[in-house]
Each structure stands twice: as C-alpha cells, then as structure tokens.
Length: 314
Ligand code: SF4
Ligand code: MG
Image (cartoon, rainbow, N blue to C red; front, side):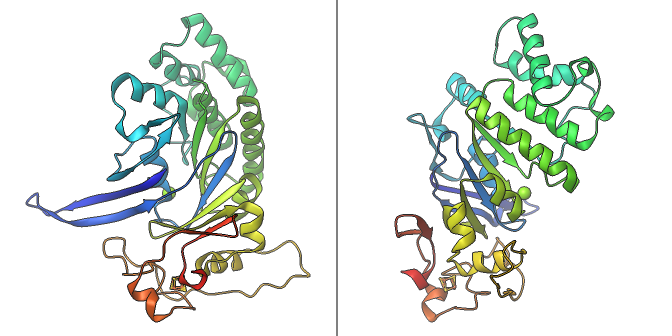
C-alpha cells in the first residue's frame, strides 16, 4: 500500500463541500503472504477506514494498493470481482454482520455462488466442511444466526470469509465484541485457519494484548497517520514513538522485574476535520520541539527493522 489517503467530504445543507474528515493520511505498508500485520490505535484513528478502503468497500481519495502486480484501486469489472474474492473481511459485530433472515448454511454458500464456484452440491459440501473446521456442527447448517452465541456467530463469519479461498483476510476488531474467555478460542481458530489456508491477515484492533499474541508486525496509527511500524517483538520491547510508548505504558507487562512508567497523554485526540499542522501528535506529545509544530515527520526506516515518524529519530 503506497500513499493511501481517504478523506470524507462534509456537505453543507445546500450540497456544498464544507470540509473533509481526514480519516487516513497517505499511509504506506506491506502485507506479506501468510503473515499477520496488526494495526493498532484508538477509536477514530483511521484503522477501520484503512481496512475498508483496501477492500474498496469505500473508495480511496488517492494512493495505490498493489496486489499481484495490479493496483486494486484501479480495477474494474471482472478484475475487481476477482480481487474481492481474494480479499475477504471479518467484521467486529457478529450480530449485525450475518443476515438474520438467512440460514447459516446459505450465508456461507452465498459468496461461492457469487463467484460461481462449483455446483450447488459442491458448495453445500464445502460450506458443511467449513462449519466443521470452524467448530460448528454440520447439523446446524439449516439454523439461523440468532440461534448461536456471539462466539459461534464469529466462527460462522470466519467460515463465510474462508468459503471463496481468499489469500488475505481483513479482520476488523474480530474479537472485541466477545467475552474474554471466548476471545482466545476465536484467536486460536484464526491462527489454525491461517496456517491451513495460507492466509495473510490485516488484523485491526485497539487491544494491544490480542495484537501482541497474533501479529508478526504491528503498525501504530494516530489521527489517520501510521506513526510506527515494526516487528511485534521490537514494538513491545523497544517502542520508539512517543505515542506508542504512551499506549504501551497503559498495559500491564508480564515480566514484573521490569518496571514501566505509566505515561499519561494529556488532552483529547484532535478532530480529524482540522488536524494539527506538523506532527499530528504534537499537541499531546511530552517531547514536543519547535519543529514538530511546523514540519511533518516522514515515516523513515531506522536500523533496518523499525519505521518511525518522529523528529526525535531524524
Ligand atoms: Fe513528539 Fe515531535 Fe516526535 Fe511528534 S515529531 S512525536 S511532537 S517529538
Ligand atoms: Mg473501528
């Protein structure tokens, strides 16, 4: 993904554009085959918009997303349909993301039908197989979503995403709506099917402990900007960006021999309609310098393994 930006226009009552919600600001990242990239940040930081734009559920304002040599953002017709088969999404809310009027079997079968995969009998067989793989008994095939618990519904959502044999799955807060005891079961399932189906995950979450568990690499977003991106170990052991440090200071660490100072970030997240000039974090950063207010730091590579957007490291 190169320079991906998404601005939502704000219309006045007379239909004129009054301004823009600057949801995602020219971000760059790479999602590798069979790997998990976690995207973390507080609500409203642009992480869901990032996932949805990648799938073209919403159109980008600018940028590129190169997948197998082609720019997803330029595709039309059959080529776009093919990419939509390869990139699937699992949503946060297992209650609203499954059609309540449909039996779960047809919910899973539907994407195969759209993409004209196999005969009806093949599709039913595959749907039953996916139910079994995701931990739902095959004889539940003709039941409706409301007959299942939240965790089971999320399993059904995962089965639906797998139905068309994708290469990438965008998971937007996939366990945030579930009880903690159920979360780990669903995370384990996601890890199992990732191996079995050779999937790359874009794992969007505000929950750092979940991301730490599942991700190979993590990108931290703040106010539409990717401010740091590195391997999961590196991020949790050696966070560099002041915002990342503050985020991590708020979660308990398992190793009690290391003491971590709790960093409280002052103030609220500024509005994405009128974001700060220079570094977007400057209004809240404990290390702010004069330059930070004027000059926006680029995301630059440090030591080959850490990318960071902060003047302290430039
Ligand atoms: Fe803080 Fe300046 Fe770094 Fe922004 S660029 S995070 S304001 S030190
Ligand atoms: Mg979100």
